Image 1 (cartoon, helix red, strand yellow):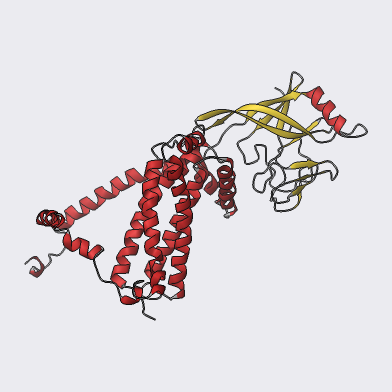
Image 2 (tube, one colour):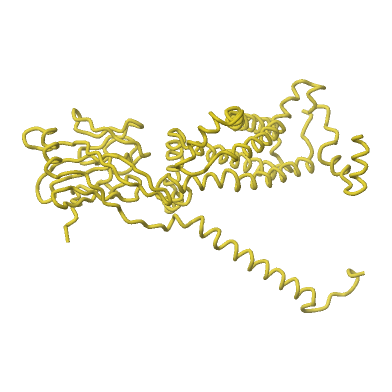
Length: 197
Length: 223
């Protein structure tokens, strides 16, 4: 019967209620979708502060680097450190190491992250070649951490550091390498010593 | 006894026609392995479905003893293996089942491709099938992280790193998948939620579409 009735021009009572129902459902869908999608994509906008970690006495680190090199020129040494890693809601003791080199001047230490910028393996320091070699896919970095061969897309990360009471502290960032990241092959050696206030 | 029970049920729910539509219909002779042994190639999809049901069952029981938290995930996995009755078997069935599904689904796809089943009017079902393949691969990828051992961690680090090479949004995409700037606590809980909640819902929906379209379009052949 309903189909045989001629349709009235304009809005019928049924059209109106359909519209109200659709709009209400749409609003409810939106109310659910906004916080759900928001919670899922939050990490894309998250920013975090670096944590400062004590690496050791500057005099000892300097002596170690000079001992590894020859003729008063410092070479690369492994500087291990431990810290408390905060991963979202998990606090855990953690340890890693940095590649430190005494270079003298106004910014006496050059501290590199050992994390390969390709896929995150720890690179090895090869003194005979004066290079860092990645054991995973063969990336090669110069002593300054510049990527010269292999799949590594960027140079090694450089730690910002500061001197407090004769001790070297490094800033561990929430980045892929754990350090400050250079986007390209910067010809200038970045001095990342943070001046004390 | 059973017949009486079905009659009792039918008086209230009318399940017999439903059952007939879903499972009790004749299939063409050329797809019947008892008529022609080579017809076993038509079973690959069905075997995949059976394996998926087995994954559902083993997965649900594994979730009883598994904790998706980085301090306990590995320990709870070890607990399942060492202290839960048949836990090692349960875990192994889930583990090997996932590998078997990938094998069966590949064979199934090869059969579809070989016989040209993807042609009209079944091209839409081919698209649904490819989506199912992606869902199954994502199942494998997210499930691989859950034991939180070294292999799982670094495999996931390598796998998730790939999305960083997507132009412009690579970094944001990595953070969304990993739940932060690196693989960690948020990654594990995300992967767990995706593995046990999001993907099963998606999988069941697309399987429903897949089977509905098989019934609508019928089986191809004989050739």
